[in-house]
Image (cartoon, rainbow over all chains, first blue to last red; front, top):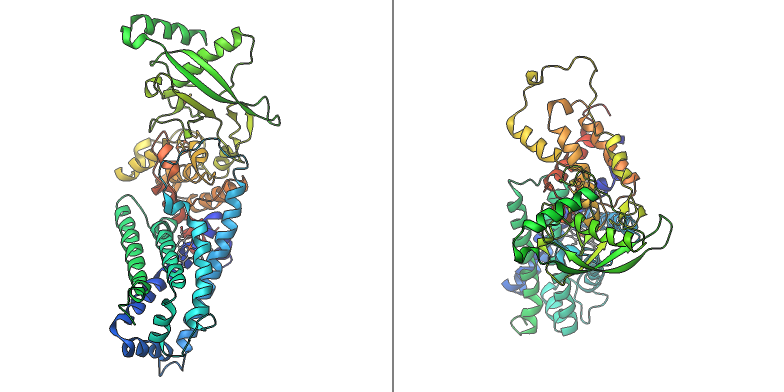
Length: 225
Length: 273
Ligand code: HEM
Ligand code: SF4
Ligand code: FES
């Protein structure tokens, strides 16, 4: 057990923490997106889905118990993910005190380069998103339990919709690199299966962005009202 | 380097007319008198470059001119000049070892440049590679990583019969791929985080794939990773820049393998470590 804990001391260990928490969050955002799409099935359907999330696991678990368990796992994951990202970023910035006058990237593109700032946008988004649709604190007409109403009213403000869309693009970019990266970090990647992981990352990040963006877009175009 | 020049002269005199027309280059070279002196770029007009020259020969000729002028020649590392020793290496127009893939600086030829080009030349830059002078950096930090575990322990005495230990062919091939690492440090130089993960993964993978490397496999992984971090290299963010500039085209698959071995070492404690 002691050995396991010392894993975190190394840079690779910190990356493993990022990859495992990233995998948990990755699984969550996929399921969350599929849940969100139920808004297209109508008010009754998505509101019933909202009730289901609170009662899931019954009768083994009580009201909101599974929900809170999930929330705790996710919050701890986000916390560890950001903590490791912060520590690694500090190490990485310190490891080259004098920058090159000229440096040309050979391989990595926009997605890999924006991991850190993209992460910051996602973190800010998570805070706003919780205050918006979970607690309703920053929502103009929040009705507890009426998910459909909250989504449609919420996205009628174009600034809010645009922020959601930007955040989804940031998340898609993050996962375009991140979802592949986690397989490399966990040591699952090799030259035989490289294309499978790369493809999985590309397809899942694209679907994620399209699925989530379709909702504010549909509200702004008047398709959901 | 007089012998090199004579060689160069003779190639030039037998070459076709077109080939022998000298190229003219503008070079921006990082000059730094010592480890703690401030450095700066100095611009040189090089009038006399043949496309047959290697990059280092091009610099040799410039240095001859500098010496004749009474200037200090540019310091850079080199030894074998045939891509096997790992001594040479510089940042050439923003790319470690220059624009030609799978090629160390000494094997890069001037035909990959055009007459009139401007070339910016910088030393490897990393906290773990302090500058000695001009383009020469100290890469002892890589030696420290090897010392931490890049070896196998054997009894001395009569050498055993080599074929006594069977090695599966795919393992032998993979191991040999990793063993090609010449410890040039280009992977560190090119890495946005100045991480030496590709080097470390090559050294650990090379031994970890062979039967002789098994007894110390997990201890080696743990110790080499710890030394890597201690030397002040950054963390790998899986960008793949290292693989792109490695003169031996070592794959980042070896980094995945290293990660796997470290996770296994910590989770299952296989060699009682
Ligand atoms: C829904 C939210 C998120 C998901 C699904 C997610 C997922 C991932 C995944 C899968 C990786 C790859 C891990 C690896 O390379 O092994 C990663 C890397 C990274 N993430 Fe996130 N992430 C999320 C939020 C964030 C946030 C909020 C931040 C920062 C504030 C952040 C910063 C980073 C950074 C800097 C890396 C690169 C780490 C490195 O390679 O050293 N992420 N993320
Ligand atoms: S892995 Fe490649 S780039 Fe890095 S030190 Fe070895 S040969 Fe040079
Ligand atoms: S001088 Fe030996 S590899 Fe270039």
